[in-house]
Amino acid sequence: MELVQRARQGDYRALARLITLVENEEPEAVEALQELYPYTGKAQVIGITGPPGSGKSTLTDKLVKELRRDNKKVAIVAVDPTSPFTGGAILGDRIRMSDLNLDEGVYIRSMGTRGSLGGLSAATSAVIKILDACNFEYIIIETVGVGQSEIDIVKMADTTLVVMVPGLGDDIQAIKAGILEIGDLFIVNKADRDGANRVVYELKMMLELKSEKSAWEPPVLMAISDQNIGIKEIADKIKEHFNYLVESNYLEIKRRDRLEKEILSIVSMKIYQQIVRKIKREGKLKEYLDALMKKELDPYKLVKQIFAEMKDN
Amino acid sequence: MSENRIRVLVAKPGLDGHDRGAKVIARALRDAGMEVIYTGLRQTPEQIVSAAIQEDVDVVAMSLLSGAHNHLFPRVVELLKKKNAEDVLVIGGGIIPEEDIPYLKEKGISEIFTPGTYTGSVVEYIRNNIKRKL
Image (cartoon, rainbow over all chains, first blue to last red):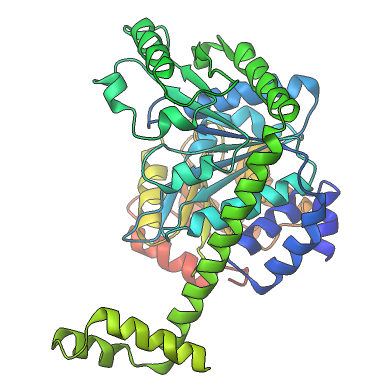
């Protein structure tokens, strides 16, 4: 595909078009992804998550500038929530990354969650593959740490950064279930604020108490991103983590695990789409709903019926 | 199943810091189901075009209140053309004197929306005038 070749040669317009094709699930998307797949597996995928207001975008901006010192190409995927009511979104992460706009070794793409369950994970995972195959050595996925799809995205990363800030009220209680488990690096940003030391201390304590320990002990780092303080240390730790993953063979284990989840997710989505299409095509939805409301049919029997009909076809 | 969404870059070229209008438009477009990439203040034409290309937007909507529209708006159109992105719809708003509008349209800005425009008109215009196939 011409678009694929141009994107791999560094044409950002072609790359951008490819990403759109995949996001919109156009028919050519599958062909493109198939062509790109052999070239994937080289990039370090870094996930950055944390509550709104923790300064993730500013941190990403400074971090990318630091990573760029080695002249490596960096791609950023910035995710923001789509309104479940209107389907629209304001994707504002670029605001903090204005300087990076003109760095030719940096590509930034804003994505909305677009609502559907698992829908984002499928698109983001494919977008990461596209970027990987187009020779970006670092791919950063920046998202807001609320809800479940963001945790899914972070599972796509080799290295996950959790960004916290002091003074969010209950600090540690604000840590959702799972955050402690997924973080490879914890960053207390805006560390010039009151309570920063306490957050660091409490985080370290809670990490100590974790039942499952691995050879990598997640460091807790302090930073003041808008003053560019602590950024180099974070970049160094990111590189250190990747080396650890490679040397311990854990990278391969993680990637196999990720592929497994991805296959199952794609399969289940395809089945779901087929069934919905079938129901809509047959136009029996109203009939089904009437029967359900009148208690002539129960949902479980209906589902069995639908599945049986699918098998027959 | 995914639906195609209209992607709009809302940008503020030049040096003025008045972003209320841009934000009002951004929210209206979001409420109309579009994905709005908002660049923030003080963007150069080069930054705007770079973002437009990377984000593969269908529309570039610029807001300017500093009077530099006759220079900056056409510059963005010119750069988009250079990057083979002529199929992006370019619209503008802000403090634009009526007498400048014909010149801007000649230079490739499809429509100008001055203060007091009903946000619904902007949404409508975009939906009816998108150049790229969705």
